[in-house]
Amino acid sequence: MLNKLYVALIHYPVLGRDGKIVSSAVTNMDVHDISRTCRTYKIKGYFVVSNLPAQQEIVHNVLKYWREEFGKEYNPSRTEALTIVKKASYLEDAIEEIVENEGEKPLIVFTSAKQGNDRLSYEEMSKIAFENEKPILFLFGTSWGLPDEILSKCDYALEPIRFYSEFNHLSVRAAVAITLDRIIKEEIDTRRDWNGSIHKSYWKWIY
Amino acid sequence: MLNKLYVALIHYPVLGRDGKIVSSAVTNMDVHDISRTCRTYKIKGYFVVSNLPAQQEIVHNVLKYWREEFGKEYNPSRTEALTIVKKASYLEDAIEEIVENEGEKPLIVFTSAKQGNDRLSYEEMSKIAFENEKPILFLFGTSWGLPDEILSKCDYALEPIRFYSEFNHLSVRAAVAITLDRIIKEEIDTRRDWNGSIHKSYWKWIY
Image (cartoon, rainbow over all chains, first blue to last red; front, side, top):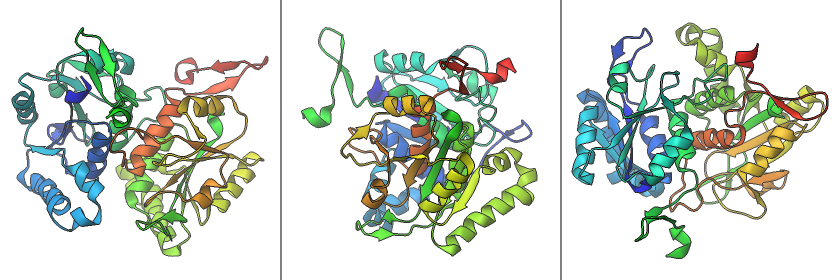
């Protein structure tokens, strides 16, 4: 269902430039841009996942400034976007928080700029997001991307964006934006009526 | 045609928070993220438009570092993305450079997070981009967006992304990514064969 979608930006474990597992640095822009994108697509929670306390501290400071300090007055829409940001030390913690919220484990979706086996098209993923009752968690990697140990925990893997272009080095900020747009598009709200068929409402006009 | 698409990120004239015309600051991330997105979608040129010499200097320094200095060795794909970045003082300079390259004036496309009259859908814009022989220049605003004086110079205006969401404050980096993806999608190359019908080729596999 579109009202149970989550996003996690993974800083550990991710691949480094030499293909080994590293813990990448959190960037201010990843917190801001991706929270604004997630809020625009009505994502329920955006987890910034980092196992390093000093990196969690950076996220904490960004959130504090914009949620409680000067930023709140300066740009309220940015404050609004950041309300959906959650900190997590490990992917497992993010999953646990979703289980607490939703009462069940989310379907977990792997993304990558690289090709692999059994990749799902965006049309197929969109259908699942619109019709499946379970919560869904989309994972995005920083640095050189998500490793196989993350893939092995996922229910689905999405096909890479523009893999057939001779250059497809999108920033993770652009990749999140394109992925959510391909899956959710202009859809605002989707709910099932009493006989189980999908009822779409552009609630802004109706309510 | 998809091989004559251009993007310009406008820093002047743009709207400030109070609705007056301002000249906004160039950010390092706007140069990087948007050039990577443009390169991924085979955009021919990405113009960073700022009338302030000090701001142009920032763009110059980013390009120099990544094209000629340490960045080139550290991350060659980022260097590759930045090859399409061009500096311009005013929109008119960007248009002039396109006229020099292509031998004709581009169709100019306005984008905004706000609604307005005669907005084109992405399907309509995509059809124009695939079939029209003229170059096309897509304009994106920084700060609080593009003013009417820019709109008056445009041939088309695109509908806002997720206008019907109660929150649609995307970063310009996300807006560029979603806009180009909606228009170009996974298309790699489009050319017309001898009888004028469109021949699409995934050249990576064919050549």
